[in-house]
Length: 121
Image (cartoon, rainbow, N blue to C red; front, side, top):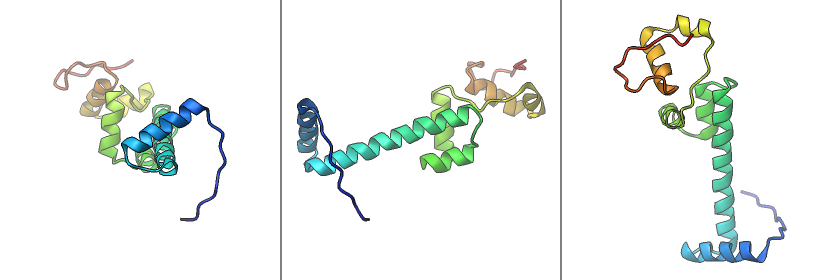
């Protein structure tokens, strides 16, 4: 991969922290900086994609592609953060009863999977 040089001014305490982290992982400063930058960009992509999914702007499949996670991994992450794909009342009415229970569970409206689902509107 072709690289480009980027000049960056950082505070002394940030450079010291970077050097400590690099030493802990037996990496040079440049490699550590690239590693941290990639990790931060991955986190940002994940957060942004989850926001778009929650607003209904992208599908689960698209969110999976963007985050490089499987749909199951993404659903579990969304569930752990109480994020559900937004549904209108009409869309909820067209869902099979089991699907409605899953939506309610994801939104935190049900405590257990085996409880009966209630209509959200």
